[in-house]
Amino acid sequence: MSKVLIIDDEKAIRYSLREILEYEKYEVDEAKDGEEGLEKIKQNDYDIVLCDIKMPKMDGIEVLEKAMELGKEIQFIMISAHGNIETAVEATKKGAFDFIQKPPDLNRLLVTMRNALDKSSLVAETKVLRKKISRTFDIVGESEAIQQVKQTIDKVAPTDARVMIMGPNGSGKELVAKWLHAKSNRNQAPLVEVNCAAIPSELIESELFGHEKGSFTSAVKQRIGKFELANNGTLFLDEIGDMSLSAQAKVLRALQEHKIARVGGDKEIKINVRVIAATNKNIPEEIKQGRFREDLYHRLSVIVIRVPSLNERKEDIPLLVDKFLEDIAEEYGEAKKTISAAALERLKEIDWTGNIRQLRNVVERLIIMSGAGITEEDVLKYAMH
Image (cartoon, rainbow, N blue to C red; front, side):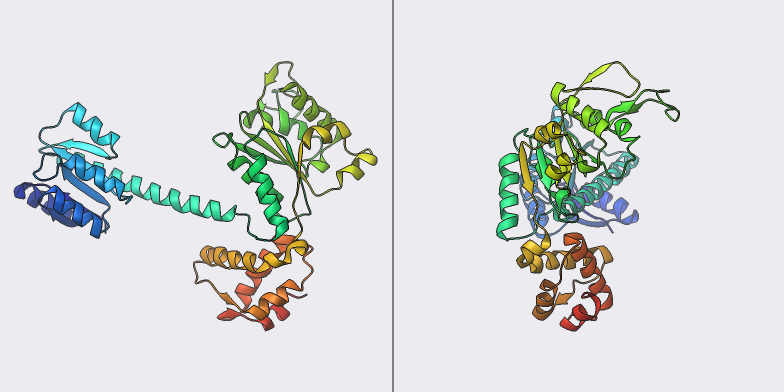
């Protein structure tokens, strides 16, 4: 049930609003002036405040300002018989959801309140999502190797330098790319990801540069490529070591000239894109074998960040396990499980060929298969095989 506070110095107004709102199944509280209203806001959690503007002791605008300073997620609907455009504009600028004149039109008031509740729900959902996203993308660890990665990200992110991220599968290269974008000056523009290993070589150029209608058999309409979609933002080329040589040549040209042409098109399109690449391959060896262009490698690797394998940072396993226990418990809607010190020591003995990804899978398996808490016996039975 949504909770509403009515702040108004007219008892008759408070009474009539209470009757209407309680009939509409709202939980209603009231205050006879601004000071009492502000005290109630401090002590309780309300979804909506209906607040008169002209009141003794403290007017409605002051109540609004002081309530906003408290940082509570409350939707204010200002009500006044002395309403004018300037007052309404001032109220909304200071954070009010809406402004209604007295006597309030019942239908308009109820619609406004429903809209205010919808906004509260969206704000709450957004906060939860942001919290989840920031936690999901967090680079966890205190080992020297991972601290070095974090320090490099902090130094490099604000620049437009191209970055090559190297490291084994499952080590967290994608996380590094996301943090480079999030901490960059381009973070209001998109981060566009392309998994070069997942796209057939004959389609990679269309994926990156787009194509014109009719440029090949299945090109039934024009397509915008990833370079264009990432304009003013960041393009993350994951597993770039798997890109065909012809696509490599076109990427090199795009980086040199800051423009592209769609497949089957003549028009050159200017682009402003920061490119971050990642690979699990030994690129110098790929260059020797003729599978990767040396000139493209030098273009992409202004900065090289090497992400350590989990085997190189086993001291971070307790922190990573704790994070996964929390994340997975939240996903399952269950209480976070405990894990014994002996179980953690056993996890450190495993050869983590699949790196962070493998560790997360193992923690999820242990959560499912163990009892109230994860023991050393659970690790021996379900993880060490």
